[in-house]
Length: 313
Ligand code: DHB
Ligand code: FE
Image 1 (cartoon, rainbow, N blue to C red):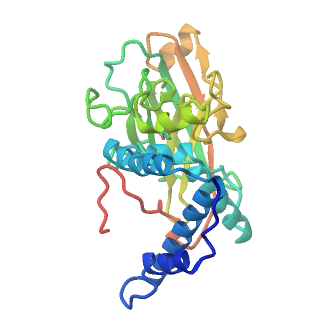
Image 2 (tube, rainbow, N blue to C red):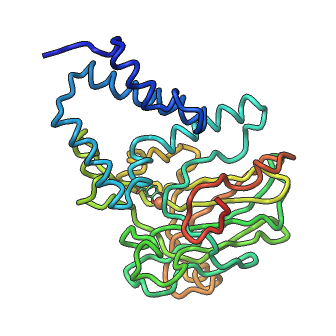
Image 3 (cartoon, rainbow, N blue to C red):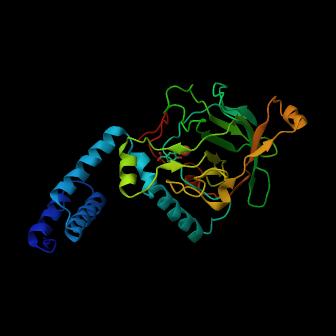
């Protein structure tokens, strides 16, 4: 049975009141957007003849999502993070401040306040004995290749099981999370472990929705970066490692061709020793170009709730 009621006075009045249009209090922007959201939801119900059973299942799904703490996990799977990147890229292009290393999504698993070191540090606590050693290094420059000393390279990644410290309480504090200040030549370097890809909790509401549309919830092995320096546009990005089944099939849509990197195995005993190591390791290089800007609001990461982040909102 298909009925049409969206055009009736009853539904129009209902939506008008739902959005608080008849109230003096409240915020106009919220009213406008809530009105559109509820109108479009009701329109979907009409157009797809959504049954009460289906609509209630959706309402309780939202509750389940909130209780599970997975709202910011399902967002990248629904393309929200990638869509915001597409918008920010277009804004940058329009304002003539595009270029440099491309951005890609932050993801929900950053923790603020990682140890800050000059030039180099070890990121792993040495307990992940299954993992391969990784040496990750690069140079931060401006768009003309001029080295940028004193840039802060904030790096975070998963362990060999795809789990992140803090969210995985079995790991030590700030394991696989470091901030490195670039040296006089703009270089940073860390010793860490090769991360594994990440999978959404298999029994959670995120995977439940993805399965309903025939999708997986896997990300390729990847390493996150925030890179910042006064006078330059803050950069949120990641690299994806090239030899992963999901390198070009990321459920979070974060892969960009320019951000895929090989992890090169180093077997040569002399090179191994020169790096202060005893065992073969994998080398990953990631050079970064920042774009100059005088606009201070673009020099820091945008606000969002983050673990251990001090905010005033
Ligand atoms: C998700 C997890 C990540 O590690 C990431 O980088 C992006 C998204 C997620 O679970 O949605
Ligand atoms: Fe991640």
